[in-house]
Image (tube, rainbow, N blue to C red; front, side, top):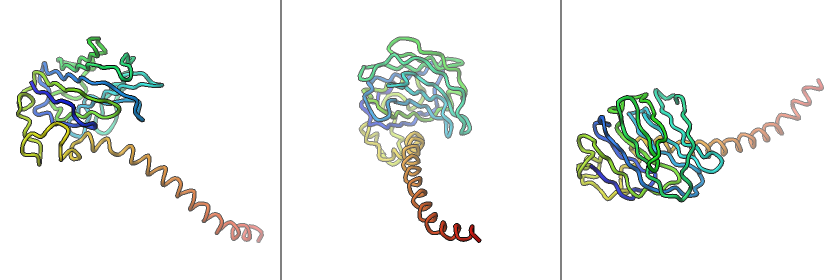
Length: 214
């Protein structure tokens, strides 16, 4: 058994030797009103995402579950999200033979069939509008229990949760960094594009106009 308390979000942690047959992850926390209006819990298997759970609020109060294989999102499953913003919740993800059993506050949400073998999962990430009180890993092999999480690169000793120096090196933060950057860049680029277009247009329009009269 291994417990992580009050991690900083966005958060990621390695999972050694994947999920075993009965492995369970319990996440206790509450969501808040953030710019995203959702939070995401993800389990990565190398470059793939074995399990991607989005809890949506606001205009889209759904739990959306998917996986990414070879860079492509697969079929998304949608379920109603009964968790309200600000309300404490307990998310339980249990590995069973052919699927993950997902429960929220004791209620079954769904059984999500494995698209990537659960034993291939090697890290977990949490991001979005969520405060996590604790994450509890149960029935995992190897270093996911006790205090044996000392293998964090560059840290030497297991640091206080949330103070991971090498956090940027992990799949979750790396994968979650692009969207905001891309959006900002696009908007920025977009403005520039119009600006340049305006200048070019002014420069060439008279010439073009003149040429046209010839």
